[in-house]
Length: 58
Image (tube, rainbow, N blue to C red; front, side, top):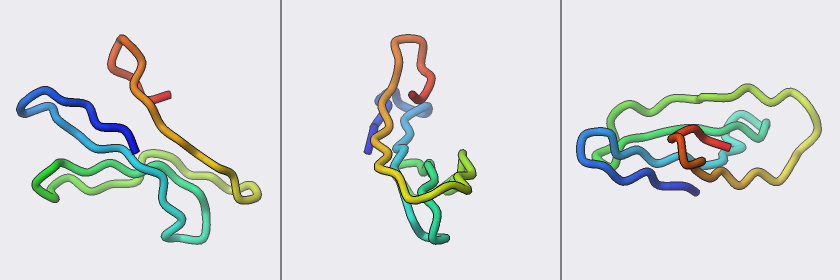
């Protein structure tokens, strides 16, 4: 899980296998804006998101 602090721009990104695929999802701390941000179609993989200095998820 990776948290980007910053007031209105604060967002949590986490790995989820909710659809039987390892995808990254994002959600606001208040539960709003839940969405899938990747689509992984390969074999299961360990994913640990982090924020780069320019604000992108790596």
